[in-house]
Amino acid sequence: MIKNDIIPVITLHHFSNPIWFEEKGAFEKSENIMDFVDFSEFAFKKFSDSVLFWCTINEPMVYVSEGYFNAEFPPGKRNPVLASKVLKNMLNAHVLVYRSLKSMPNGNNVKIGMVKNIFQFDPFNRINLLDLYMSSLLNDIFTNEPIKFLKEGKSTFFMPGLVNDKIDNKNAKGTLDFIGLNYYSRFHVKGKLNPNEPFVFQTRKKDIQTDMNYPIYPEGIYKALKTISKLNVPIYITENGVADSSDQIRSKFIDEYLYATNKALLEGVEVKGYFYWTLMDNFEWAKGYSMKFGLYKVDFKNQERKLRQGSMSLVEIIKRSKNKIRIEK
Image (cartoon, rainbow, N blue to C red; front, side, top):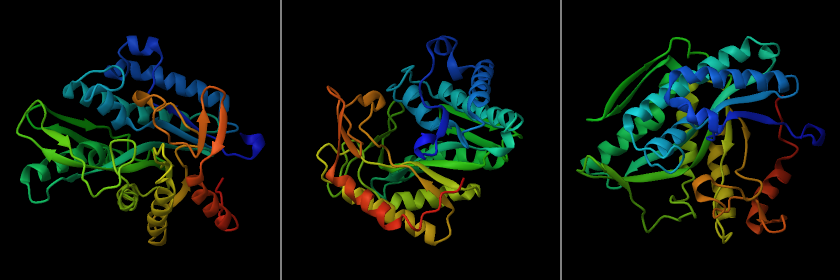
């Protein structure tokens, strides 16, 4: 990448674990955190002299929700108490990795951050108290409290009748040189009087749906940038893209999401970089190869890659902006 004038960014944990780490209990056990720290130090020794940007953990709340709420990702459990413990261990792991890498040779020469996914949870019916309560609760769990931890070192994981866990780490403050923001869309929440299924996500006919189970919502990336800016560190949009196998809405997505991003920039939000997800069609975790996020269409039988027509919006934006873009190294 460096030889081709591409700036690499290393992410130390992006959902998947080695089997041996999973068999030890992974992030379910606090004593396993040091295994992740050791791995991070090993990688840092190898690459810190040539790689400037480092992300400790990608989307800890997605790892927690999909692995311990929805059972879509390994280890496929549904246990809110365990979910809270895993989140606590992952956030504390970030703190330890940041402090450790910063103390190593090249530590002061690199930028180290974490990647936070934001999905807004909006009430399906804005005058329905149950919808309002559940959407507010989910926003706290998934976004507001983790951000509070990174800013203040304290947060709460609260689900009524299930778990009320405090996270407190005085070393957490100041462990971000930047924050990565992954943003795609929002969910509409319909609350239910069922302790086993307290809410469902409801689609709306007027929304433009992507191939994933969420709609296009460009206003959301503006709101997410405003929310994440509370951390008062530079922001890199580390993921933003659309699953669109028909290539009918990709151009609209790119134009509208970048317009909303530019609005935040004009209002002073410190956005330093933007990564489109993704360059080529990818393996999308539990969805396999069915979701087509790529700017380039990939034929997985012969590896042929072809630029999608809908991707030309991004190409044209880059062409128009190339004399204005300043890459900060």
